Length: 354
Ligand SMILES: [Zn+2]
Image (cartoon, rainbow, N blue to C red):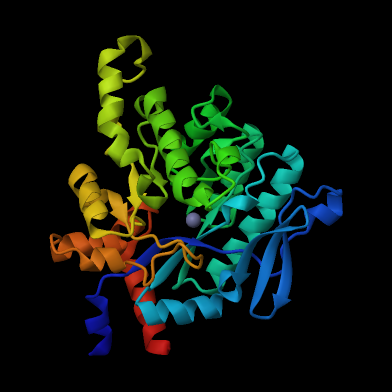
């Protein structure tokens, strides 16, 4: 029977994808402040994200249209996409109440999309980290009222790294409530030195991600909050390769130590998406962190994405079937505290109906 056959297949999840509402909130108009990202439709098939009247990014309708996304997912063999906001919309620079307005808008939109297509999409929310109490309040609403499965965080808050004392309370609550966190680079360090070559994306983002991960590790936060569940985008950026140097520093400078163990110990507790483009790089990560800590994430639908999602994992010769199944879907379900049996049955039903 087809149903039984499908049930034995493991779900393929793309953990790292972005979405934005077609009717995006225009806070530039509302507050007369042109730092807010604004969506300007160019046709039914696409739009420009504008900031201060300048084109920040050209996007296609795949960025907002669930049906277009599902066509691509079916083509690429992806059962479930995890939807998260586009980092430029984090807007931590804004007045906290306005930042909350933006976060609520996005969370409502992502939750409604996931509710409409419960077998194909799972949503992550965003919170106004510039005010830790509002951020905790919105995390509570996003998870407990809207049914989002985790929170996406930017890699710094107005130039403060994520180990800033003002943010500690947010991580305390994420730990207490066991909310999965997806940390994505944005407002990258040194971007004033990267006006050319699109280096912000190629060098800035991986460096920024390493700094964010290193800050969390070195702060001792993971000893204090042992339930924190954190995934870093883009394979952790340059972090995996920098860990031996961080361990060396931790060893030779006892006066800077805030942790019980060297940095590489904590890096093994993180999750990472698989967006590193080459089998050699992913193998390096599997060897370092284990197949349980890595999950396919493609950065759909943007230019630097892996297409088809999971391509590099599929090309790896060293993985056994169990490890490949984990990286291609099961780890993401575990990370997001999703019940895989229920998910598989629902997905199965959806396949029968389509
Ligand atoms: Zn991304």
